Image (cartoon, rainbow, N blue to C red; front, side, top):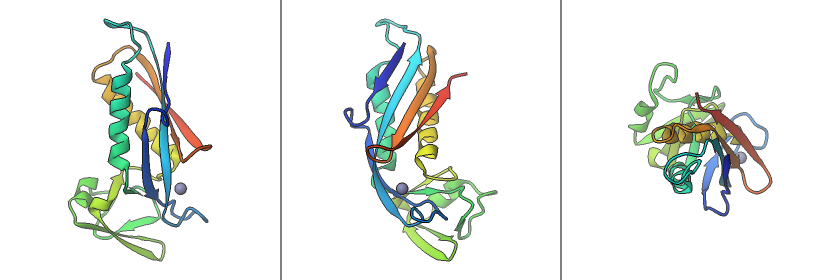
Length: 172
Ligand SMILES: [Zn+2]
């Protein structure tokens, strides 16, 4: 059986700024009011014969939303972003997080952002596609700590009403 959680109605939302380096119109820092829909399929089990407790799904998804809310989302593994004193092939993201500010260039534009104002994500892009994959994988990992009856978690990250990307993470 499948359960569905509607992001708008369940307040699974976040407002963040991002940039898609190299893109004609999205290559400028801009923002979205995102919302996140979740679909989970699995066998019903446990004391209440649930697929999964809605409370857990909402709590874990909201925690990811809160982590990204009111921040600039920086895709550390983007090929066009060059960080000062940081080699993305060798150094860990924790090194960047320890700094007060992050310094990077995207082609000929330079940025200095206080580290507390951004979220450094281990992603090549902060597109709806990559964010939905990030949400689905993070949520699946968290649910796997307490559930062993689930088949997949699918997360749709919507960049406002009318456009979103969905990623399905199948449990092994
Ligand atoms: Zn955008």
